[in-house]
Image (cartoon, rainbow, N blue to C red; front, side, top):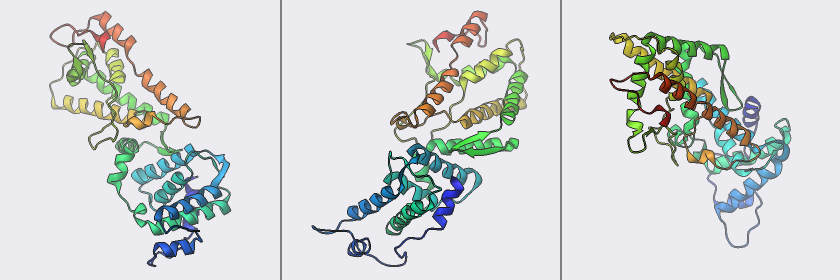
Length: 331
């Protein structure tokens, strides 16, 4: 659908001339808009949106698929350096005009070109829509930017990456190789030493009053530049627990480098799975088109819970500090 959409956009032209200085009266006359009480830009926008919706309304493509296409365009730009504009801007107009409406198949080129012509006219009127403003896009699509950054990080391992329906797909064999490398590094450090460092890293998350660690997701209305993928503590605890009999203490400089690689690799690998939410709004507005995807994400997050592991660790009374391990079942 990505390439079909790009081709249709490239083969469609606006009815307005981009180098002509129009005023509201010109727009009303050009689009044959009826008026009684003066001219407004909102009326012109409503006219364009109405025509886009009229041409595209159908039963073939659900609204959620348009949003998947938008994420596909964004990820393709961030990872593969493919052109983002004007495709992203035009698709944004179509999404806004057809909100929560199923549309015709993209194979219906007549209706799509007719709708795209009105979208192109909107671009002529408001050309800033197709300007590249990655700083603004990162604020509203933080999740895609973080997934893209993690994907590019993992490409140093020559992973075969593809984009399917607006999401990153990594070969299972490549993911297993990276996971095996993470586990090997943990084994090298030794389970006890690794767990000690891991708990040092989350020490500021421990609530003395409640006797538990607070490691929940950090959401905000508008994710900031400091929002980052979460370190998969549950995943790393599971791996560390496998090698608690490996009582090693490395003091060489390479040990710190390996520790950092473990954190970076595991965080990037889990981020590419793309289940982390960065904004409160990602939990809202669920319907029959996107509820399945939302539940799948929650299921993966729930699997990272570590209740059973913690009970095992507590039963073994592992000492990773100079004192007994804190109440692990309270994490």
